[in-house]
Length: 140
Image (tube, rainbow, N blue to C red; front, side, top):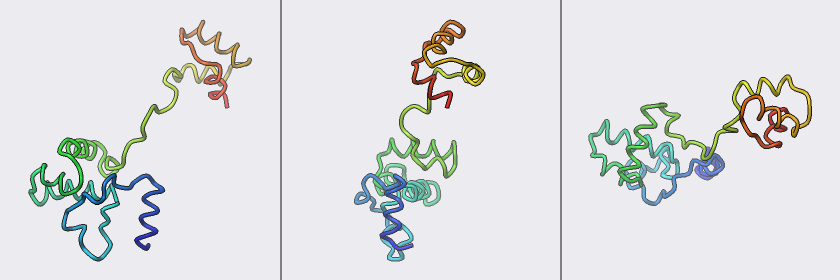
């Protein structure tokens, strides 16, 4: 994969380092093209490796990889919790409807009626007020 296509793939995946110019680690100066300062996941991994393997201080490692000391600890925590997947950024925002419990979804799978009718029935039965569109989307 060429450097340009790799950079485009990183951009398409949302994995571009927010400030690649701030990456000063010597490993990213190698002419092989294996290490790209634009590769956010690789930079995070190398930041952790520099600290834990090479013994570089947290402050120095974070600064050399374009991150703050506080960001280092967030990356470390995410890596401890999920391994390499922890180096990927989490999706922002809510992860789906909050009020749709498994019981309500099961009810909707068996129920008949319009979104408005089911909204009223859910409120009466489960004590949860849902928007009509939420009910309609859940039934698709």
